[in-house]
Each structure stands twice: as C-alpha cells, then as structure tokens.
Image (cartoon, rainbow, N blue to C red; front, side, top):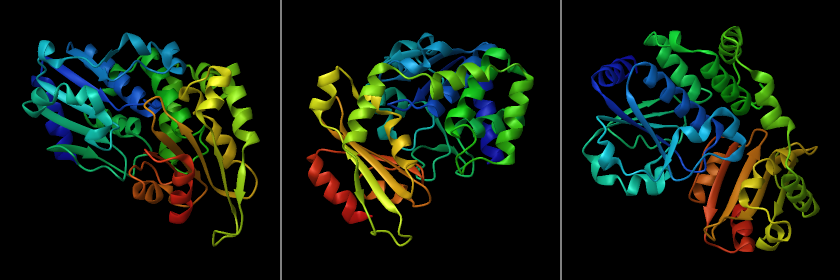
Length: 326
C-alpha cells in the first residue's frame, strides 16, 4: 500500500491536468472525497475537473457542490495527464461519463481509490483498504503520509466533518473506530462547521420526503420467524403512482430505509421503488446480517449492512427473489 501511495504522489507531482471521477447517484462519501481531493489539488496548482453523470443532489448544494462537477464531460478537450476514481467499486459505477471517455481513459494513467470490500480492483493501480470506514478516511491517511493535511482549511474541514457525520450516521454505525473520533477532533480543531451538516442531513426534511415516507410507512410488511435470531424482516414497496401523486422523485427516498431498520425487533429492512430509467431499486439495511452478499446475488452490492441492487423485474418478482435469497 505504501509503495502505491508513493507512486500516486509521484504521478500527481508530474501531472499538470488531473481528472477525478465520482460514482453515479452520489452519496456523501464519493462527493466529499472527490471535493476534498479537488481542492487540495487546486492548492497544488493543478488544473482539475470532476466528472459525474449529473450534478450533486440538492442536499449537497450548501457545500459548493455544483461549482465542482462537470456532468458527462468530454475529456478530449481537457486531455488529462492523470485520472483518479474515488469511492467506485466497479467501472460500471462511472456509467456514461466513463463510456463517452473510454478511449482517452484507456490511454491515460488511471488510479482507483476506494474502501469497499466488494471492489473489483478494476484498474492497474488500485489503492483499496476495506478496513477504512470510508474513502474519505482512506484519503485522510494518504494525505497524512504525503504531508498534505497542512492544506486543510475551514472550508475543507467542513467538507470532511460532513463525511464523518453522514458515513457513520453521527458515529452510530459499526464502521466507527477511535480513529474516526480522532479525525473528527482534528477537523473540529480546524473550525469545521459540524452543526450545519447535522441540520442539513439529519434534521431538515422536505415536505416531499415527509409525504413519501408516510406512503412507505403505510405499506410496511413484516416477515416474521424467517431468520435464525427470530428477528423480523421489514419491507415496503412503492410504485410509480406513489411518486406521481405527490410530484416526488426517487431522490426523495434516501432516508426511508433508515426509519424501517430502526423499527423494534428488525434485523433486515428493505424498500423497493422505481427509478427514472424504469428499473426498480431495492435498498437494504441490516443490524448484523451481511446484506452485501444478498445484493451481490441480485447484481449489485455495497457494504455489509447497507447495500442495494437494481432490477428489470416487476416488484413482486423482485420481492420473491429477495426473500428467497435471505
């Protein structure tokens, strides 16, 4: 790992123009790690572009999100010396932004930085540590080794404290270690604004999210006595009409699953809902069950206790497949 990190620094030093990739359907970790690296590289006087298929979710806008992202950007004009992917577990997660630039990517040095245990090690240089709680934590380690943390100012510190709060569910998730708290302490010492991030991601709720949550809660189903520990499987299925009734989109679904998994005596929770591309998505959470293995059987995966999959099947067919594989 240390040799790869030193190689990364050598390549960064030599490069004048660097392209960054964050994965589709951005979550906080992929955005914060990408944004952090973007600002650090600018401080090193590099020309930087950050690619994604779309702009950041509205929840991210208060942290200068859309000043950074170039949706479906054509890299031929930029002609990067180096490309770095952050928080993507596979090349498929780079989607159209990869496909339209596949030729130039195949002829440019490409580095993968990630923490997912399911990463396919999909390029020549892979800096992957599944023991890190997040890609941001791994990047923090890399920057400490390279003596780049000295460039962290209040703006960058606020980005990073948001990563810790969102990726650990305010220090609740099992990925939290003493190291996580130590990094948070360092960031707060650099005047990171944690209250704004807690309000934005954990306190503030749009009326659309409230209405959609109400629909999901009204459709809760419980599967009892299926698991070895006698705890329940809880799920809810939303259909297209549920969204059109209140003019909501699939972007308003991101906190429904957090309510389901916190229902008393629940071991596994999932919600199935339609995406804009006419596929269905199933989001999973668990207390201790490895839902990553479950999601992998259904085509996609992520973390042991937080994963998802997509499908072309009908909702009832997908439901049956999920329950059969648990």
